[in-house]
Length: 427
Image 1 (cartoon, rainbow, N blue to C red):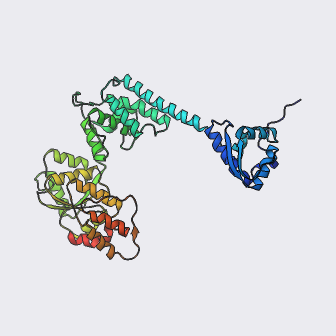
Image 2 (spheres, rainbow, N blue to C red):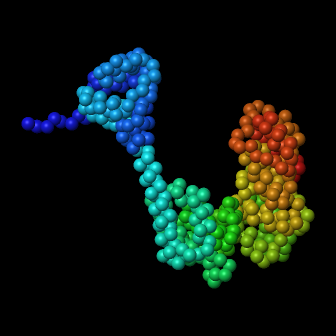
Image 3 (tube, helix red, strand yellow):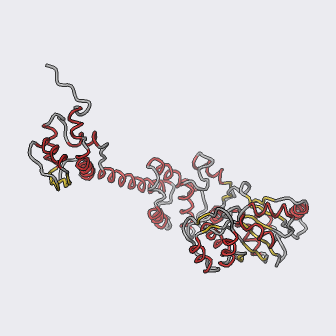
């Protein structure tokens, strides 16, 4: 005699009976209970059924069920389903009626085991390159645990990062007492240690983990800005990309007699916008080239539209555009201008991201340019047509506390394009 064929699913009539909306709350409760109980039908189910749901459950249990609050052992429901035309237990029925049931406890255990495996692998990788006993390693590992940069990654990627990070750190002069090494490009270091020339690019998890290790070894705080990360790489003899990122300038006329300064003055005389790279800003600083004479007014804006309009209008004074949050080149230029004694003033969008950028720029030594509460109110009053609502997280305006309060009250964003005529008048 042949054994009965396994059913592909619930019999149609029974499925229609059990899938009635009146029983949906029961199956949802079963689904949650099974996920919490490692897929085992145990514990007590508590649901509120209407008359139709109570009748249908009573038919399944072969005993009357009264409408209203119902308490039912999951094991009893499992037994009733197995004895019914379903011929399968609660887990299989709920999976068909509601969807896949996941063992949440087992999943948590697996994630914990994966995290433990990651830390074990990191310890092994550090030991293999002779760094396990370094005094800064516990500080670094504690920072990684708190930050979650490793444990947020998929397990396979976390292992790849762990395997590579020890090789990168072992190739660097991590402390001030370490013997210096010849400067190398970041891409060359990445190729040598990871096999991927972009393996240590900014934004990659491996780069973040490595730089936290470098900071811990040097007793420093992990860098948060592109400029800070570039400086930390430079401190261990690694040169990052210094040519692709630029900052926009107009009318910048360095007073020195060197060829670079002369070329910038020539571009300014020709009415050309100039993109300055980190490379030329760094190399010119290394030989002591001044960007301006002390006291020269240098205006700084956030939006390229302002610089474009200034160029079109033939503004003669120097103008710098950060194009949003300053890049490494932008920060380097701002720092050099401030340190060189220039009178640097900054204007940006009057929305929450804009004032956050302004706070960072002003903290580096610039002064506010039309960034008061009064300036904002005048701009709001002058706006015509559709206005943009403020969006994002409110940011403080310590240079003028009234500005943030006024922005919250009006709830309107004022971008630089809206006050372009006013800014051009100042320039």
